[in-house]
Structure formats: C-alpha cells, structure tokens
Image 1 (cartoon, rainbow, N blue to C red):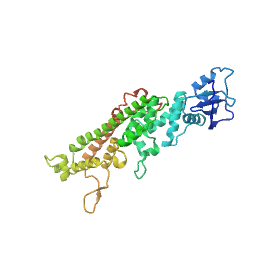
Image 2: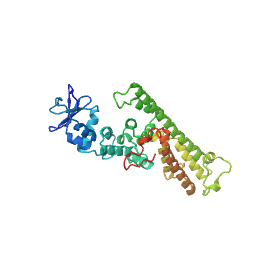
Image 3: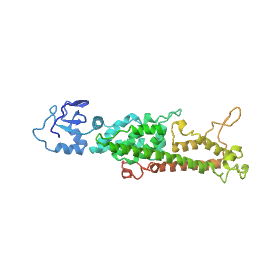
Image 4: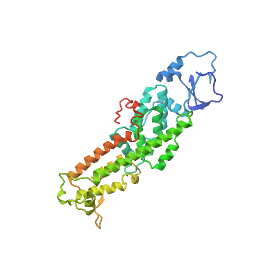
Length: 372
C-alpha cells in the first residue's frame, strides 16, 4: 500500500463500487474502487500484497486503503472487466486488440494464468503458426466477392509485433512480420515510424534502435519472399520439363526452349506453363489483390489457376476455357506448388530473423500447436 494519496484522483466511471474496499490508482491518477477478495481470489500477487500488515496511520481515499500502480488506466480497466465479467471473443475483430493486449499485459504481471492463456490463444488464432490456420485466417478476412479487408478483422501487425517484443511471445512474431511485409515500402516506413514505446520511461535510444531493427527485419524478410518467388518461377515454370507421362509430349518442338515453345503454341502443356508464368509476373496474385509481396498467396493463386475455366481462348468471340494442360503435367505441377507453399511458410521465421531471437517462448500456450 502507498502512504501518499494523489492530490487529484479521477474516479473510474466503470469500476467505482460503493461497497468496494480497496482503490487501485493507475497512471495518471485514475482510481478504481474494487474488492480485495476479487483481486486476491485470482491473483497471487494481490493476495500476497493484501496480506502484508499496513501501518495504522495510513491515509485513506473514500474510506479505503489504496494501491498505487504504474499501469495504463485503459489496460487496468480491461483487466478488471475480465476479472469481474470474464473475457469473451465472438470472432476475429480488430477492435478487440486493446482489450486482448491490456488483459495480457496485466494478467502476465499479476499472475492471472487463466486470463493470460485466453489472450494468448486469441493471439495465436489471429497470428497462427501453421499454414492451414493461416489460410483459415485469410479466408475469414475475404468477402464472398473476393474483397480482402484484413484490418477489419485483425489489428495492424506493428501493434502485434510490439506486443510480441514487449511480452516475449515469439510464436506470433513470424505471422505478424509477414503480414507487415505485404504492405508497400512507403506504408511500412510510415507505420514503423509511428510506433510508440510500450513504456513511457523507455530511453529514446531504445526506441530508435527498435525502429531500425523492425525496418531491417521487415525489408529483409520482404526481399527474401520476393526472391523465393523469383527462384520458383525460374526453376518450376521457365525451365519446367514435361511430365514423363505427358499426353502432349509428341507435339513438342525438339530443341526449342520451353518459353519459346509456349509462345509458338507448339505444346498445350508448355503453353499453359507459360501462361501461368505471365500471370504471376503481372502480379495478379499480388498488388492487384491488395497483397503485395505475398508469396504464400501468390502460390495459392497459381494452384487455383489449374482449375479455373474463365480464361479467354484468344478467339474473336472470346470464349472462356481452362488451361489446356494434360492430367499428368497438371498433377505434377499442382503437387510442386503445394510443396513450394509449405516450404515458403516454413521459411518465414528465417526470412525475418525471428526463429532464434524469440525461440524461448515457443509453444508456451497450453493446447496450442506451434509449427514454426
């Protein structure tokens, strides 16, 4: 307990119970009149604190002893609401993040494990470590007409990265860095420069160093992802051989290169590979869909091209058709793209150099499978 009450106390409109018997004072002098038993029941920290004998001449506020905390008043309000009412999430919603972050900070600080686990599970749901869960996440942020609106459902990734650094939660960092890197360079710079320190007392040098570290990680990871796609195009499309069981092999023009044969229309399978290559180079799976530098999504779009039937056949009447690729080449290429997506996903921690830096807390959430 403190011995010097604040000169001016702002009473919380949400947590000022008439029968409360202790007042928590946050920065800057926001008071919360709550119940000692409720705090002690859930937190060993508060239980121990309240067991410490207090001097008989301790000053009171509104007839109650007070505890001066160094917590953000919004965080404390979210934390108390979770203690009294529980914490519930109806689904992905970016507006939930302040509550998740605030409750996680204070449940970690005051050892309220059940609330901490709930918040961590929500973060891992929104920033997953498996490709299957990432695809589920992305689908949830995409409307039926294909509009992608991630910021409606998930907070800005910089906020998540900041929280991961502050509370040492390494398992959500790769997905958050990957999400951030999908922005254009200008938006990345604007977002990182606006990053606020988690603690008011943090030295300016620390903020500058953190900003520089985030920039380096983000741009290095972005470049690595783009290089991965470039290597995939060169290896699996530009120089891709036909399947040994290709039904169109007998139409192949001997020594003519793959790309040239596609342009000449010599072989339907070569032509299809070349068509896919052109579509990827035109960034159909990237900027046009609002997902710049997103190799995982680009490879998903590549795979989906194999089953699409809305391509023009080039005729005057513009008939729609699918790729004229034989079943053998289609099957082999589909498996190839699937492996490339898995490899890209597994490479993300290395791209952003977070696999070693924050590996200590990996898999710390009960019942959560961490696959990085």
